[in-house]
Image 1: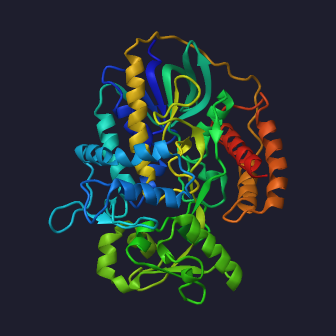
Image 2 (image 1 turned 180 degrees about the vertical axis):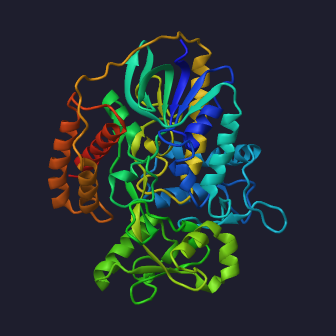
Image 3 (image 1 turned 45 degrees about the vertical axis):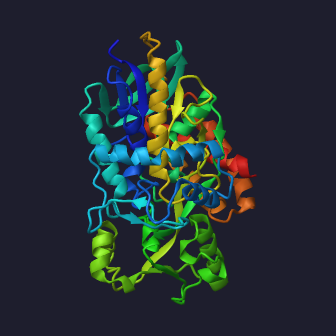
Length: 482
């Protein structure tokens, strides 16, 4: 029974790792990373973690709650938001205990920055690479835990409910292995790779969402996709993000005429929530007939910017841009998913034993639009709640079992070009301002591709898993909007 675990966690970002870390030390836990263990969307998070922690400057939980609701268009789930903001302080405390190095001021106190949509400075950060630092601290603790096995380059290919638990078909180094468990946690991140341009890493193909959908779990509001207004504009598939905190520290948005324009669209100017700013950029683009937009924070000076935003500063230097002297070309880009696998406040899906945490989950905290720096917080808070719920149920005992998946005979590799076609359909039909005619046409083609990939005649490898996941995600998104 070496391949049986009390819990299997699919995904090695903040949500998955934090869940695994808080499961009982007496339990056997397997964490699967699709590629290198360090490759995850969590690592790319620049801004920070929003929290009312040892509050200063008149900040309080009510203000954080209100900011979250305003950003989400008041479509947020009140119970989930209450959990998020009230457990934020303990999440910060736990991350600090694990050794995360957050920036501090000249008095040694934790520094707080401001981001769009926040009414107070409540963003705790590590320079402009907070996600990488938080992920590192949690991963180090996971690797030091004797009861947790972290297995990289392991693709979740299929899931089946068996004997009151789950069997998971995993592809590692071209070899399939079936692992079984009593509890399964999906922490597979977002869906960015369903678009031609995204800030997401290469793993973000919606695998967990597609697998949960195939199991019959409820998928909610998958069409609630956030487009970040300030991605570096160079037409790369994986766009470098210019953090929300750059505007939080005073950057101006400029149009093609090098003029500020947000006053035409919102009184909050550059500090309006992300969806408002992205929508404003698209309207301004239509007004000017140009897609040239810039961030301008030159007035802060090179010394300050190099210290406050070292990662962004160094990246821009590779593009021959000195953010202390030059304008930064930006444009909206797919960034985050508010919808996903529907869960309750303990991260439970409507399938017994199946949990979802992080970006692939729909907790309802974000409403129609995520407030900046609530994403890492959501992964921490609801990852720990998932672990606590599983821990209580593990006390009831567990019965190991085995299972074996069959592989199709005489199988072929999937046709080439399908993923590229899906990305083009989504980019053209459902960007910041949707094109409904293209959405209807795209849905018909995506439905054909999904049906094609579900034939039992293809080699079960990462290409098939990701193509099918992208087709499933696109199918659900477009079905919701047409």
